[in-house]
Amino acid sequence: MQIIDIAIAPIGPEYLDGAVRLSRQSGWPHRPEDWRLALALSQGFVAVTGSGEVAGTILLTPYGADCATINMVIVDEGMRGRGLGRRLMEAAMTLAGDRPLRLVATAEGLPLYERLGFRATGTIVQHQGVAGRITAPDNTEVATADDLPAILDLDRQAYGADRADLIRKLAEVGEFAVIRCDSQVSAFAANRSFGRGEVIGPVVAPDLEAAKALVSHFVSRRKDVFLRIDTGAGTGLAPWLEEQGFAHVGGGIAMARPIIIPPAPTAVTTFALANQALG
Image 1: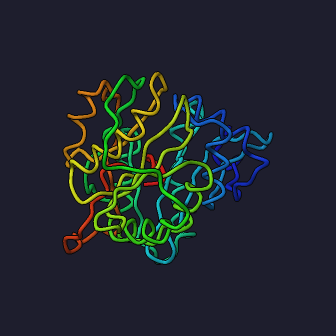
Image 2: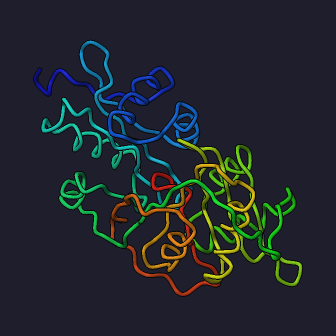
């Protein structure tokens, strides 16, 4: 089949089965529910063959006018080498308009992203495993609905963009834990069902010890549950995760276009991502 036989079309629920098939082909753990959550927050495209088969996917998740992430970039292994990845990327970049873009690259996708003007900004490491017995921290608590404005503000500070839609969706499908200082929320973490089990993130905290406490909050309540945590290699969280039995199983290269100028230091840092796709 020639590349001209493959059309690029807006993604929609009618392509869900094909998208799930592609993610499973690539060894990704996304369930239909995980795709539905991503679609609820995103726009995007599919590459469709003349017979109606989904040959590629891409999502663009906008965070207001501040920036957007490009994610779920998948091309059917039988269709690679035909320029589909570039066509999908160009469609998403056009959709993004003037927004700065972020993504997490696999080794396979890295050369294409570099040709399109993306540059590396860091390394993401993925840890996962079955939760063992861990002592519950004494400085965390389950968040309430009244904590949401403070959580939104902390996430905006740490991420540098307005991710209100994402945070509200995570509150709807999962749960949050917080740490308070002088009765004010000073750190938070989210947990939700994902893939083979659950994913912890984002984790936003003023320091590493607070981040460890927030992760421990969920791990201590989920003995024998399969958990995943995606963290930046430079946060210092990864060695501790390995000590808790969460093996390093992969990751990717964080990239941006245009290159992000490091912001002024903030009071909080993102120690774990919502996952590699959503940032």
